[in-house]
Length: 172
Picture 1 (tube, rainbow, N blue to C red):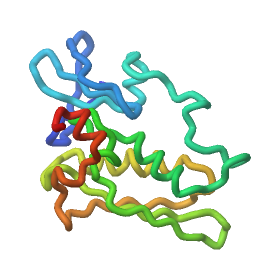
Picture 2: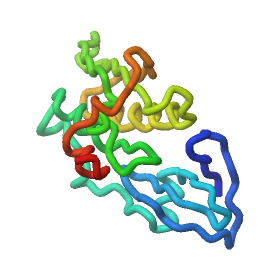
Picture 3: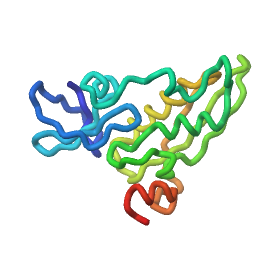
Picture 4: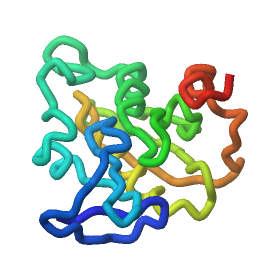
């Protein structure tokens, strides 16, 4: 099974029979430690296959184009389904999402431009979280294009975290 070493972001292959301990199973993927102490992120597909997370259900969908249409609230809600693999808090509560800007396309659908950051400038998981965010927002009704850019100015710091994140992390 393919996995990604945290925080480096390098690929690794776990062999059948390797023991793992689940650290968190949030946002559709699982973070586990291997028997040799490495922390790795499993893909959503492997996390489901091994029973660490449940498959998405119809009731999990943030919006339904037949009834809801587009809303900026749905975009923020979709972003809140993405978790930092090292921290059991979603990227919205962590303050990693700096900007979400929708615009109209000629088709009548939306383009969503998003700026996000990471908790450390050399975090190897940035591209993975960026792709998770892209995929979550792309799945929304009436969204045709999504561009997620990793930004480092201003640099992220703990003051960007919500009270919910601080409480979850024992900082309050």
